[in-house]
Each structure stands twice: as structure tokens, then as C-alpha cells.
Length: 504
Image (cartoon, rainbow, N blue to C red):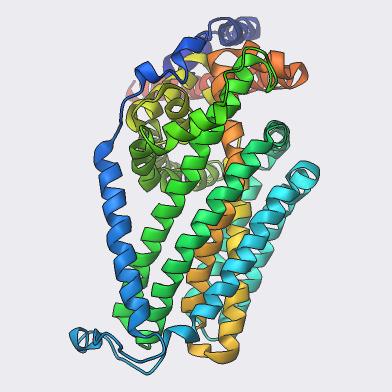
């Protein structure tokens, strides 16, 4: 819902006019959603290669980094300075006699643990998904606090403070969104229901997890060579940061590729009224897969650079903003940051991947069209209230922490001075791979919201009870926004009146 709509609703003085205004918007959401033409979706005639520049950058980065990782690992494999690389870094690094095989098994354990966590998540998706999500929300704060205590006990004060801060922020965020958790769990349950009815989605997730594990084998080989190459040196940490950023981008690209594949399939299922509908096109999964790894892959590479960071920043600022209270100075500062992030969200949001999957748009246009669709129909009020993405992120972080803990404990038993280094990089590996398992549910969530904004009757045909629950919640959120706008208008009028009295 746009600001102009909010302002026009708030200008009414009677509650009956507010109700009528909200009812009108609610009817528009039901009636005026753009009907989807099957001919526009997955049509090869409208598919062109998008964001090719970012596709080239990603592939060049992957090839160059793979070469560097192999060199870094081989240089310390079974023999110190096998390739005589250390002579180029004598002025930067403080070298020792560590070997790649001293640390590579630790990363292998991390890979095994996270692979098990990802498979368990997918296997329990149908029967215990709600319980697993609740555990992710409530257990993450405790786990962060415990890791913080362990870091202080190991005299790692910086990391102890970092994890303690993370625990505090997580606790504050959960408090700020606790009212929206029941609706969030409802949306996640319906998304799980959709995903569980599509067994081919699980096969896609398993396949991409296997691809990611293969790349992690190469990545961890190079990372182990870096860990073995020096001790307590700033240059080593900077190199690990560069490798971690690369791993994050690669993992995000694979996650969002799965996102596009699953979104396209879910969208087709909702359009045609079921997986087994006679109007369903043949081999929908292969069509979605082909578009995701060819014409739309550049858009996926581009969006993966920025989307996750902007989403996380938006969640934290929104949670903090709701708990500021009456501190006007602090509120103004945070509100400025919030508006800045909201502007970025217009061009970088996860709902773009549904538009990419269905219509083959470039990333920026897809993100802008999705956000304008939400705002024009009022569904943005519902999307802003939902925190399913944050709940899934909590599960991803928890999986990463468990993986990092397992690798860190083994490292502490043999190389205690390398615990933080191995543990933190293993944690990133865990987050990337668990995120690949989580993304199938997030894809269904985004597709449900896009379909509800495009044509709410699609959701009504799929699940009438869920449609009524979404419509009721949207009506409540629009009422809430109208009340807030009316309160702000009243306060502004009061301030203006007091200023006039003061001047007189």
C-alpha cells in the first residue's frame, strides 16, 4: 500500500469510513490482481539472456579462484612449500611447518556434519518442519550465548563479544516480531505442504547440495593450505576473508538457482490448480532448470551479490525500529537508515527470483516489478509483517554454528591456536549448505505471495482456508497501517496547533 493511500485513509475521521477504505483496498486485492496468461510463462519466444556481464564475472571468478585454491593447497600438501610460493610472501607472512593435511580432515568433518544436517532437514520436512522451525527460533539465542562463553573461556575476547552481541541482537529481534510468529508459522506450514507434494523438488535440492559439497572439497583444500601457511598473521586472515566472500557468493548463486527452479515449478502448480492437472505442461521441472542455468543465470549471479546482505540488514533495522520508544533523535536516525534500506529493497529483493523464473526478466526489473506489484495491491503490508525468511535464516545460522562447533572442537584438541580460524570458516561452510536445504521452503513462500498479489483466486483454488486466513490478516494489517497514519496525522496537527499558539 502506498503512502498516498495511507494518508488518504488516515484523513477520515470516522471509523466507518476507515473500514470502507480498507474494504475497498481488500476488494482490489481480490478482484484487480493481474490475471496470469499461461502463454507468457515459460515461453521460449520471450526468453533472452539477461545480465550476461555478471555471468561472465562469476564464471571467471570461479575458474581463477579454483586455480588459486589448488595452488594454495598443494603448496603445503605432504611437503612444506612444495611449489616455492613462500618466497613471494616472506615480507607478509610468518611461515611455519604446518601442512594442508593437518587441517583438511577438520573441514572434511565439517562437510560430513553439514551434509547430514541438510539431509535430515529435507527428510523431516514433511513431518516435523514446524517443530524444527520453532527450535531454530528459540534455540539459536542460547547456542550463541554458549559459544560466547566458550570463546571467553578460551581467552578469545573479540569473538566472545561478537557472539554475545549476536545473541543479544537475536533475542531483541525475536521479541520485536513475536506477534507475527503465529502467522509466519502458518505460511511456512503451507509452503512445506506445497514442497512436500513435489518430490522432484527434493531431488533438485539433493543434486545441488552434492555440487556444493564437491566445490567445498576444493575450497577447503585451499583454505587448509592457508591455515597451515602461517601463524597469527594478518595477511592470512585477509586471504581467508577473500576466500570466504567467494564461498558466500558461490553458495548464494547455487541457492538462488534452486530458488528460481522451485519457484517456477510452484508457480506452474498454482496456475494450473495442481501437479496432476491435465493443463500442466510436460516436463515443467526441466524447463525451469534449463532457464535457470542458461538465460537467467546472469541475473541470479547479479542478485546473489547483494540480496542476502540487504535482507538481513532490513530485518535487524526493522526490529530495532519497533522497540525505540519515544527517543525522537534516535528514531529519526534509525528511520533514515530504514528508508535507505527500503529503497535498496525495491531493487534487490528475493521476490525477484519468482519473476525471473516465470517471465525471464533481468534482476533489477524483476525486483522492481515485484515490489511495485506488492505496493499497488496492498500485499506489501502482509509481506512486511511476515518473517518467514528470518526464521529460515535462523535455522541456517544454527546449522552453521553446529558445523563450526564440531570442526572447532576437533581442532582445539590438536591445534588449539587454530580453533577460531577453522571454526569460523567451517561455520560458513555449514551455513551455505544448510541454506541450500532451506531455500526450497523459501521459494514456495515467495511464490505464494507473488501468486496472491497477481491473482488471489489461485491461492483460493489451491487452499480455500489458507486464502481466508491470508485475506483476514491482510485486512488487519491495513487497519493497523491506517490507525498509525491517523495517529501521526493527529500528532502533526496537534504540533502545528501548539506552534501557532506559541507564536501568538
